[in-house]
Image (tube, rainbow, N blue to C red):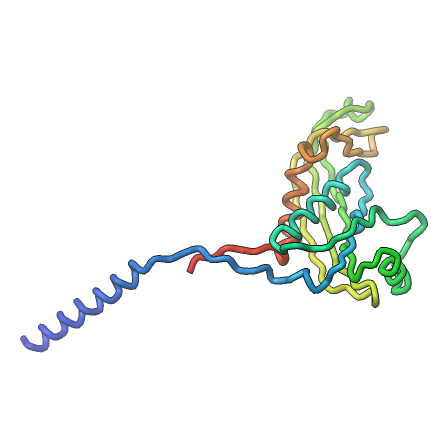
Length: 208
């Protein structure tokens, strides 16, 4: 009987301890970005390349910059514009030249590839130009390159598929992203891609 009393008392004590532990308050805390961009300043940003006509790549570049620096504090970044005509490939010498010309130590470069466009229209529609909607499959690849060596310091890629409007088709083969307001028309696709590739530069929240 005495042993049973001790066992019961032990269980009560254990239950009390567990109950107190369960009632301990938890809170959301911020985890800093995995990559700190401050040491890589000055940072040049070259407009992302894309084989698609329209302002899709331009929008992706702008949204990437906004998200990449959101949790990074004050960063010095320089807009380098699109790649120069005639620049077919990059070499260590060409990276150094850009670094000297613009006084940047690193460059963000990216490529937006639209790999699949599945228009929602009939056979008759393909014979004429018109604004259509389509399911678009796109991939965004971005890297951070050191201008002094041409070495890639970081890279990431993302893929997303969304239904978009304001897509024109010409001659039944060529698709053009030509919305007057690209952010409203294509923002859902671009934001999905950018959110994935900027994960390393953004702070996160965890419960502790």
